Length: 495
View 1 (cartoon, rainbow, N blue to C red):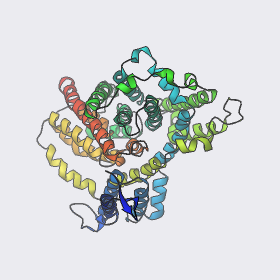
View 2 (cartoon, helix red, strand yellow; view 1 turned 90 degrees about the horizontal axis):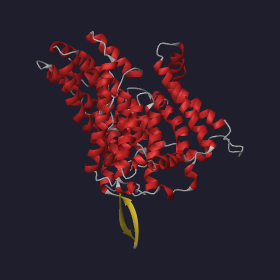
View 3 (cartoon, one colour; view 1 turned 135 degrees about the vertical axis):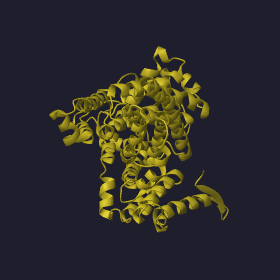
């Protein structure tokens, strides 16, 4: 819906805010600063009401208005909520690890596209015989191959790089800026990278959830068995998504099919020395992070993941690229910051990550009283039901909760709720545990659902908030359509 209307003033047409936009502004500010004055209900505390109001205001403002000004009001509302003070709010938000990691990833990934990697990739892949006249197959391969690679490649880094490449594909093929091709492609990248990163919980907070599940149920999750379920699930989900979105959103793949790569300029035929060096250093950084994530428990792993951290590793990558010579004989570094900064760094993404991730985490903090309320609502629904019912309900509930607040917090909160009923049902606990951990990672519909979701919803190329919600809902429904029968089948035949 348009935020402006055209009116005549002194015989001249001028634009001004539409009445509906003023309404959206009022609702956003009411949630942020007025919702907390409503008397608390159930187990919610006064602080919980204020935090819930800030959360609702952020989601509503991002969906109907803008990203920048609601973010600044959210800083103020969060800092005066009583949950934290203003200084702590600013430090927590702008100092969030994902904000820093996104910033340094933008520099290196954005530079790749700026210096021609995207155009080279488009020409190279679209000219392959296997993809000639098969744009839908090309799209499916793009989503599946990069989605599966997210099991070892950092999701945020991969996501940012793939967005830039898909945008180049759309630009070179001649798709309009607000075409469904872009939204479906960006949504598929979001879905694929999240699914890939969720397949096996061998690191980070997902590893923590699997260990908590093992401690509560006495049944450790077998990563091999979980992978045998989640890998085919990921492929099937992305298959359903690609074909369903073509029909639902009427994506015109004929434009890609008719595209002639020979019309691209000569520079797209080869990678420059500068681009090669940027690519090599990026791939080296990714390899080091993968190796550290594989050799868990070693001094090398501890140094990379806990001392340097993933964000620090990509910071080193970006710093070296800003320092090392380009190899082009121009006396300049691989990345010229002043040249790439406008195209590489997205402030809406950084602000959305800064705002949504701490607030989503605060929603599930025990001081707010929101989790006990949800526990009281959902616990009675599990009593007296079969293992398959509990498994299906776990999948549906995980999908709902992970798109409402922090997936880390809700995942941890669900384990003590669900585990006792799973054990009572007699079903092998690892099937419900695998389903919970896999699904709880797929937060994508709302900006605060996860770090990848915040980056997706803040992309400047995707200006239509309604369309963003629609493609992410299509992704979430694709997950449910596949996960419910597939995990149920595994539980029945292998349990």
